[in-house]
Length: 541
Image (cartoon, rainbow, N blue to C red; front, side, top):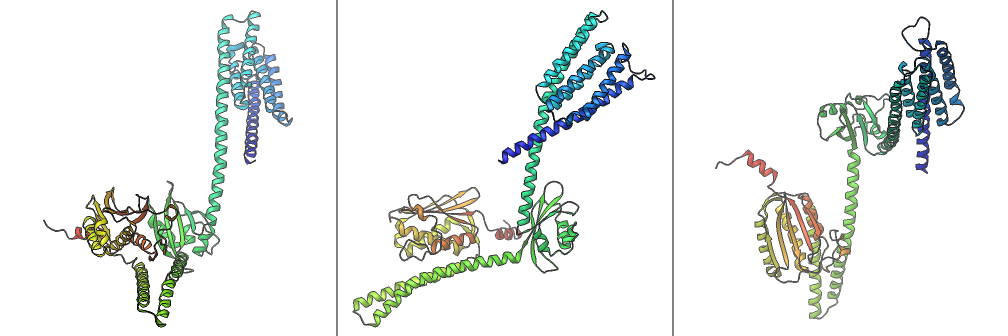
């Protein structure tokens, strides 16, 4: 329906445009007919037209002017089709201009070239195949006129060549005008469509900007605010109704903008609104090549409140999961203690004591891992050479896990430096490798540690040959308290990923090979602070 309406609108606009062109064509006809009559005034000797039959020329010119005025005033109001009106007018032009040419000495008078203007105008207004019909009609008219002159014995037959060349010009003009008209129509339609799209886009942009939670101001090179949304007025606590300059919104913001001018990058600054005392973050961005600037205003208090809400929600989920995880071991400990109090055999007592000890250890691990989360933001990065670190880690783990001595295989192809907190990296590898040892087959090379440099990053892979992770569980492995092991806490992989993020690294689960395959990606190179210290204190060789 919208496409149909758009097509009808385009057709109506095109027809209206052609009627306007026809109106200007009628004005041209009136002006040219008036000039022909003025040229025949008694004192005017500058124009050599109408010399053969002056009286007939004056009569034809007068009728031509009268008809031109009639066309200008009446034809557009008769509600005829554009093609009919144009055809009537062009035929009139051809007839009267041919008669004027005949009374002025034929083709040598130059009036034949006026038909070229008529055909060009008709081609631009008509925009159809009738333009070629008009050219043929004009050709027949000038050939008949010259033939009549030759038959009357005062015309030169050799002038047929001149008349023929004019006739060729008629067709050339008609074809050119038709092609130009088609090009003009296509460009006009394209411009109209682009205008509609631009208007729609501007409307959408205004709607989006108006409904944004952040304040938005568009400022030109002279400091005038070209566009803003209601939220900007609210955040800046603007009271004045006259708001044209940025200084009318905020003098502090205008000062910061003037300092930022000339920079081709985004800059963020915190400002405080004097009226309300609200703390805002202002982001300055260049917008186009005309000196425009785009200013985003964010309410830092609102962002802080939203962050607090997110943290509280996460803490609530963590607390609920911890309560659920603690309840089961406590229930087991409580039940075992009640049975011990009733007095049981030595064998049962030993089993109950073991249950109490195992669940107490599970609670201790859970508390230790939750405390590990608290150290996420306490990273102390240092430059670590991964080849030595992995070798030392494998040796330490083999001392605690007998299975690791046989299962581990290291593939270190780079001796790159990475910037990482040593205790965090140790904890991450411990969580990943103990999981791999738990699920591997225990054969030689069942757990592989692979270190490789990829472009400007270093990848550390932990791969086992176990059953792998089922497809439906892959999206849950990093969620807290998710575990498929009976005695696991479900925090190992979650903590590993959090510690990686605290050190600017990423931990991803890749496709099974055939067992689980985890990859740690970290940017290679020494820590920036160590590089700056070396630059400040060079050691003499």
